[in-house]
Length: 140
Image (tube, rainbow, N blue to C red):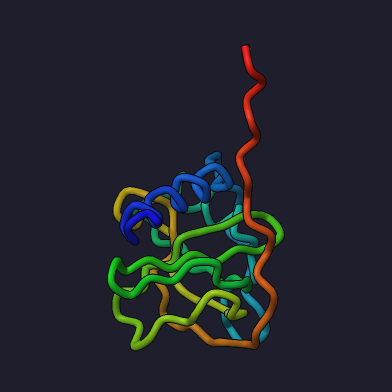
């Protein structure tokens, strides 16, 4: 069995394959309560990449797929992909399989696209998505 830090790094490499980088579109308008509009994780990543220092307000809903308090890692996935949530300042981290709604600012977090949360609310439990499995290369 691999050590926890090695497993985490390998897992993150798999998640990185699903984090799209591209140009950001206009910031969606907020909802009736003044909160930022709900956006997909892929859009959070585009906003964060294109305007890393702008710290655009965002809100997203998804499921926690990785949570590590020791390494300060939290990843949330929705139907569009995964994004990093900076857990620094959160009192506790939700466990994998927890559905969450995150409100915060999209931007560069440690040089990578992500969200600095202002509010994180657990909205229920769900079944984790099937793990990504690398394909076997054809033998030469």
